[in-house]
Length: 223
Image (cartoon, rainbow, N blue to C red; front, side, top):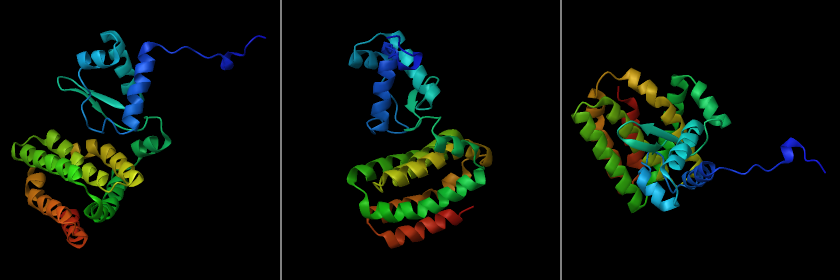
């Protein structure tokens, strides 16, 4: 019997197989958003494949929106969802003011839950990004500071251990990043607000949801 074209199983290339395995690790959370992927030689060793296969697989995942290549820095996880996901498309089209409003609403829920659910591993990550935020602000490195600020707040969202809340916040904030780069002309705001962010982390470490809500209220009112 002659097969219809859409019923024929197409054999995937090695690059496609590797792309699928990396994608699965990303969606499973083995590679976190913002995390740097192992270098090409390490991926070649782990999966037993050649350099050209690694590069083609990375290209596939970049085109799908899972990875982002930063020249001179490496390849980083951009998203746990494909760029053609309906929500991702909607967020890309959204007005920056709408996205920022959603972010602010979510942050209130996030700090309350993070205060009650955070683990020591969560705190370690939160403090690392907070320190990076402060250091890049003091150095006047605006783009790196915005990136660290986003990673800090996303780490707070992750500390809620609510996957839907985390994904909603992460998606909204990542799409806001380019807008932030146009809003802020220097790191002055980030430097001035660093003490308040440090207070927020202390509240969360103390598992004091009431104080955390008060502090996030101050942060959200800061110019």
